[in-house]
Image (cartoon, rainbow, N blue to C red; front, top):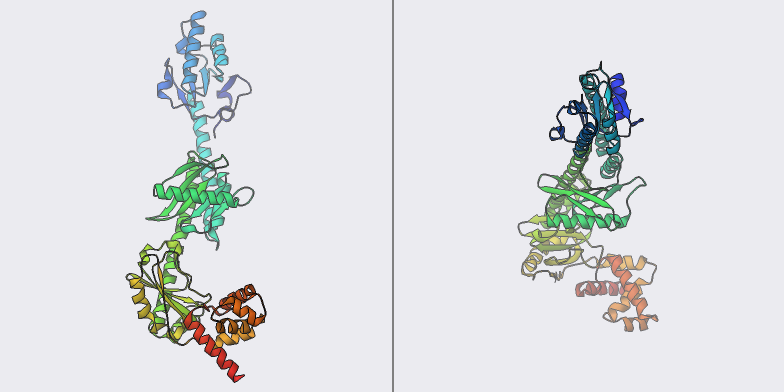
Length: 477
């Protein structure tokens, strides 16, 4: 920023303060020379106006006082920052009427000595502009290097946001697309969770109302914020939020665009990585559904993927294009035209599928047998009503002996509780009487057993296979 005081110091003896002394902190946008009675039509505002005072020539007494007031008032209304009077050509000294008019209008008044050309003052100003531009460029380059280094970190998003917050001197938040984890930075650390939740709602509203729009908002705390979309091509990556509104300065825009570009590139890379991972998962799922589970396990090891489960569910979802991006199912997913095959480890009584999904599911059953029910589950999915999931009975062998071993090894009386529960066909009260415990205890233990085995004990196929295994265990015992 070039102030009037900096210009006086740079111009040395070519520009001398006359009133007031010392000079106030006035920012200059340029230096302009004019002898017009109304030079403001050629000005933008914020200039130091240099003149030899021809407008006041030939006037004396009340006429010069009135002309001085009119001239100075016109300059102030036009946004002139200060007035410099060149001595010698028009006036040997500053007219008292001009000084009085400047004092009345609070317009700083300076003089240019007789031996100093106006060009010397202009050169001093533009030398300051050059020096300031170089300093700004150096600082900008350093900040951009810091942002680029932050982007190379493993957890890049929070680092980029922190560097941008330091550079802009305000809090910054990045709200990613699809409900991802936001990143934020402030002088005191991260932003409060309540504020991040409010920003997520505001960015979602803005995204819905106007795709790719920028918005200035008033937060519930009363503070202003500005939301800017972050995107690479047609795919939106989220919103960058600044803890202030209004226009960014030129250097700030450069920094903001750098940070936005780095975040968009990170998001695009993550989307590509996710797509590659889904394709790899699809290859594993395709091998399993073709009955080549051994090949799928070998390929998973070669790919450094998680080991494939021994027991799994198979779900087929129709119209997968209707699923939100953030509702992509867990497990191995194979996408085919109009269908989504999902292989999910049997870690719960039912597969965990997106809300309002349409389709069918079967299992749990050994991974090596899933291919035997693939066509049956797909046919059921094609007939499922919108928003419904149809359960398909498998009727195939289940690892019931392994289930019995797990129940036996558990210290919480699960084996005898499951046996009593199945014997009483799922009646809590009757099973509790047989065991001598309250029905709520039976309910709690059955919940534990279901979670331990990853099955629904009320499933007729599961109950039948497990009951036979328990009977076999008793007979052998």
